[in-house]
Length: 103
Image (cartoon, rainbow, N blue to C red; front, top):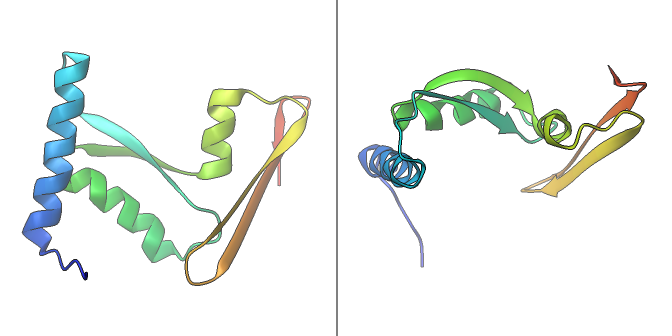
């Protein structure tokens, strides 16, 4: 089966997901940040922001996925490696030493 979505259907889906999350949280979301896979072209990075705009959210920031993961994990000495595949293999890594980010 092939799924072909119109632009209107994509916007509707994003907005519906936002409403569902707001209903569970009990308050309106006004902005969000987006994480993108390492190594993707800049056009794909911008596309992640467009998903937020389509849902009616302001994009407060764009961050690579390894750095976003560390914002949660708070690694001081170590690394996060993100490997994934779409049409090509991508690998991104971010390291921290003494709590300082080094690439």
